[in-house]
Amino acid sequence: MSQIVHTYLSENGKLSCQNAMQMAQEYALPLAEVGAIAQTEAIRISDCLLGQFGSLKEGEFDEAVWQQLVERAGSRERITCADAMAIAQQVGFDTVRGTLLAGRMEVTHCALGCFGQRRKTKLYLKTKSWIENRDEELVLSKGKIDILERIDALGSIAKAAEAMGMSYKKAWNHIKTLQENLDDEILITRKGSGRDSGTRLTPIAREFITHYRQMQERIETYADAQFKQLFLTARSRKDTQNR
Image (tube, rainbow, N blue to C red; front, side):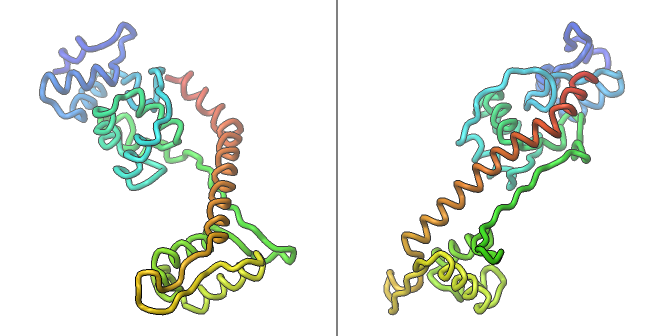
């Protein structure tokens, strides 16, 4: 096999990810074995099909593909090479490359062994936003939004508190703080045992949730762009020059 792998090399003496996959399929070999052969022969892998290195064309971000990636990975931050490959073989590598890179989802455990839990020193940006009143008291945050949505889904403050592992008193205090500072009714409670009974959010509460989500998304988009420009661009250029 050490001689065969040389027949799949490109003009620059490297083994492209695509050719490695082709060799694995034609000889019924695990990709890891092809990667091991390349490593033994001191052959570098080039042009990762998932866009982690190389210069292959990127497709546009695709929301439906993004949802598939997140569901398969169980995370918005990272996905294994095997899982991303499985989706790419169905929808196309260009689209998956573009979606992974635009969504800043890291690919781990390369099937060819190029990287494991790769780039352990990679930097990540985490942003948190909240709204305070004039006394610098917390009024609205992701935690409070989560409580509101749980109450609306479960129809009960007590059930929502239990689901989130907090006391009823603490949950109610969150609601009380919101109502006092937002100067609007947050909850509607209907007694009885029918379908419409229980505690639900008012339209204004749902509006607050929508506006908070939009605000947080815009902040993250701007912050990610600044973070990439200020912290990652120089490192990416250095990595490209070293390949």
